[in-house]
Image 1 (cartoon, rainbow, N blue to C red):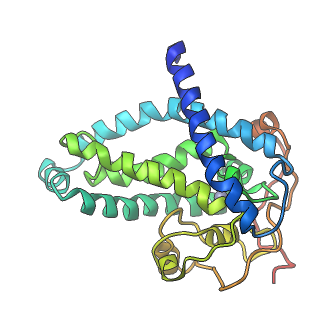
Image 2: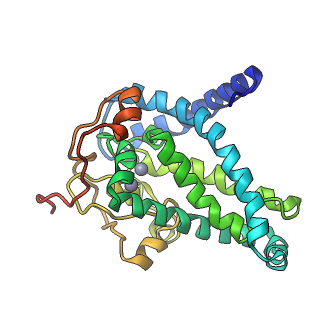
Length: 279
Ligand SMILES: [Zn+2]
Ligand SMILES: [Zn+2]
């Protein structure tokens, strides 16, 4: 599959503008209130910068076909009366419901990734970061990234909260996608902030940093946006005032994009067991 040269150039330009905006927001904030001081050009910064562009270009290219199929199949699978009813709900209801059911889809996929060894091989690329900042959001194997996005979109389309059920429906995944994308950068950022009661409603850097902890407890905080899902399923861990001591995985991971891209297909054994030194 190929895309026109102008499309590729336009996508690249969009990613450059978006990156400039993210840097303008997060670089000063991460200097002002860091979880732990670190240089902007911390280890593997260049790797994550390459992932930013690779995943920005490749994921968009790969996702188009399954999302179009999903939009078509959902209309065949689900009763049309139900899809019309949900499609005509006020947009704010569909957006809020979309955030919750979309994140539920992602939660289930993400939790499975942590427990099924061959899926963990792909997801381990994201967890291999040893330093946290906003750019770690982009470190992911493209197949893991695409599967995760689809897992979040399937409930939206099946419930008629997105897709071509009336022109209005297409705005819901766009709003959720834009906000969710920005929030992904925020929760990975090296930013020592707590949001008080809002932490009951929305994920935060501390919530997601605990998901990346190396020392344990591991396998917590699977939700991307809605921490209530982890509270509901008993996987929530976000103690007040505490942050992980270290981030990453037990086994080594290549430090370049090519090596990380091929790593899931290699012979290296990967486990995701709770470390014995967990505290
Ligand atoms: Zn994970
Ligand atoms: Zn993460």
